[in-house]
Image 1 (tube, rainbow, N blue to C red):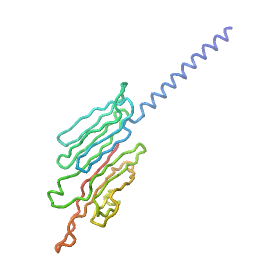
Image 2 (image 1 turned 90 degrees about the horizontal axis):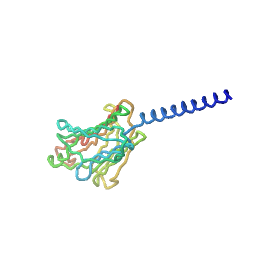
Image 3 (image 1 turned 180 degrees about the vertical axis):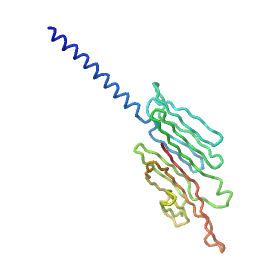
Image 4 (image 1 turned 90 degrees about the vertical axis):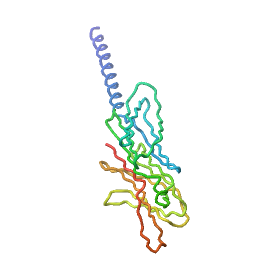
Length: 224
């Protein structure tokens, strides 16, 4: 009888240890989970910028704006309360740039998107920029989707500049054709993902023609 009682006690202890081990495994998994799932930065046809992002359930988001360099940082914290998982904010370009940062305090990870743009450039220069709207989306698989729309009669070509390590989208005057484009881009580990829209401007029929290359907008994505 004593032996049976001893075995029963050991079984209970073993179950307790297994239960604790399972709880530790769950906690470890939760601690390694990423709070930021996806994000999308876009400029619409009016020139207005916005950011949309998705976070894991029970994630608290604190926003901090640095007016000096126009940086908007979103600090993500794990919470025990039900929170909104889809968040959207309008963005404003100041001194031709805006920066958005995401700081995952649980995974000690950060993502940032810096955009250089001047939507009033075309009006000031008398030229027409052919890019109408665009968006960059970070997916959960780590790939980035670039989608954009151009004016009619625009020739679009994609070039990867090996020297500068920039994905370039060249926009030139052309014949009527496709206006909506999409590309999937991969960010190399330890290197920023850079995207430049390169506008080829100027009148080729003018006597003193000199082509002007305008890199607007420029997008730089960095993650740690």
